[in-house]
Image 1 (cartoon, one colour):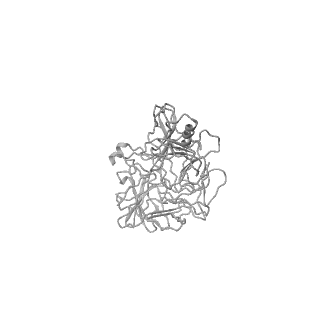
Image 2: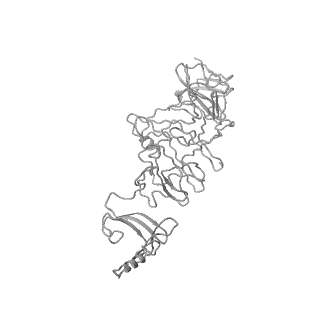
Image 3: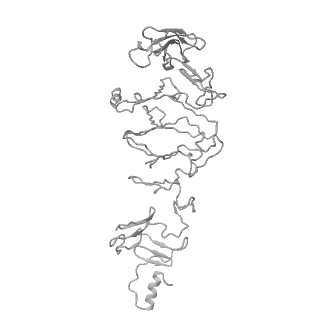
Length: 461
């Protein structure tokens, strides 16, 4: 029978031969010099290639040498082109009704150079394509762990042995640019207002699924960066850039997706998911910091929580140098307001409600505690609650409360900027601006003696 090969793989003027697939004892797409005798041969002309004398239903390889390398295209006589191995440059333009036209698009706005090996163009601006995909690769796999381990290295996840597509690039010592094994671009100029999914531009959609008796994890994307030399400029597991060229400065939106975001995480399905972002320690190494923001990179807040979670921040690990550390000059800690009411306090607690108390320090267990300590290099003052006799001060009993201050210093009580009206030292007390006085002794039991004692303490003039 006659069979016309429609694959646009061989240039016009090329002598192409049809070999029975049975010439090759092993399955798979051949390469190199063909084996055995050809059943038919024809020279491709005017974009047509018709073999004669083939057996209907038999499988063949169409083979020709192009540019010093053999190209193979498999077909069944009486059927359609089935598969091919292309060892040199192949240009396939508009695999639709018109093979002579197709727009070339690049990763950026400028027109890219032509491809070295394969160039597939599907549709033009004047005649765009509709429903369907340009190229489809499917694989149904049954690779065993033993088979993959035998290929090596043991314990890998199969990038070379259980993958539908493998794309790799290596920069030589002469390479001076960023090499990219896969460049993706989605460019959308259309709009849809029907209320369903919007007309987005998505260069990569990765979906993973584990079902049935599967025991592995569903991981739609795995990224690993390896830096093997200290002369390298560094490494990132993922680099994300949000480039807003709209002329409109976007702000955070609570309750829905903001207009521009670096990462958008959502839980879905019938059950609750565990963590939106989790840092692990599976490989024995650590990050220096978990979250970091460079200087001048943020405007309103480093973190914002508009959720109704039981806890906003829940710290449970042991932290040697502090669970929360606010460095000098970082600003105030404000509770109860979004802006400070006073410019100088490092801690401001504010409430418009009748709270009693506004701040609470203490314990539900039987402990002696000094709940507050105000200090500088030369003195301190603290408030305490006692659980045993003589805690903090001699004479205290269980449940007593009080104030302590540095021995040799004076505790003052009075109106701000005015003279203190009560002054207490470790050995005496004074009232109404009088310096602390020791307890009067030897006081005469007369009106004059009593007046002298009270006057010494500053209680009367």
